[in-house]
Amino acid sequence: MTTDLDAFSHLSLDVLMNLPHVKDLHTSFSLGEVKGESALPLQHLDGK
Image (cartoon, rainbow, N blue to C red; front, side, top):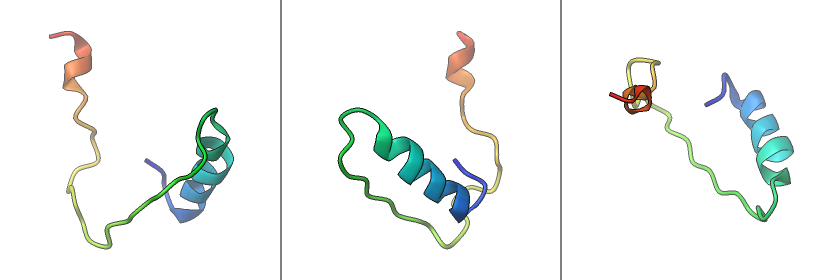
């Protein structure tokens, strides 16, 4: 997750594409709201 398209561009071109064994990257964007809240569903990580 990134804050804007410039941050996404940095993440994809400067970080993800420089990972070992990554040779190509395909992305898609939603132009409408997909999820109304910003919290990620990570409850499964607390071990309960």
